Image 1 (cartoon, one colour):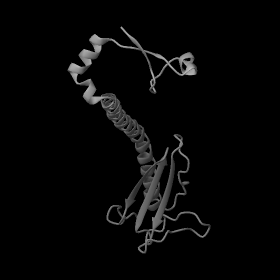
Image 2 (tube, rainbow, N blue to C red):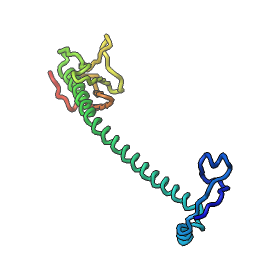
Image 3 (cartoon, rainbow, N blue to C red):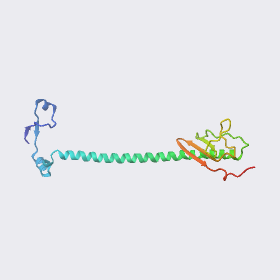
Image 4 (cartoon, helix red, strand yellow):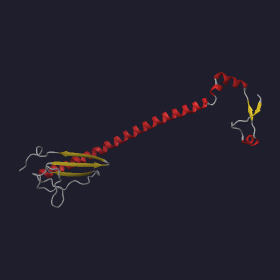
Length: 178
């Protein structure tokens, strides 16, 4: 093992850097082995290739993890939306039932369902043949005027899920009451 001063930019101790020189150790057997493997031909490019391949593999794993996370979040969101959607459908159905009851029993005054016990909301529109909302003189929904009501739209909403039901031509579906 022989020692020679080091005059290149390799990492050395701060003491040696302050003096402007360092001791470089040579291991002939290892140098010979490196030459057999072609290390002299590659030089520092072998280290660069290793860094690039590690970065590429890390990018692939990161991409796969992100895709898996997005898929999991969408599945969780679908499961939550399914529950909200079911409640919104029930609210929209309650609105249709209310409008049909008003249409078939105009003599009874039943208030329109507003906030339901499960905190779902419902809105109902009774429309004429021109798709205009029918209202009483005091501004309430008018689903009792049998000769004007052409269609009913009910919207149920719960936790961000909206579902809408519509009966587009009500007359064939509801029998004529005396």
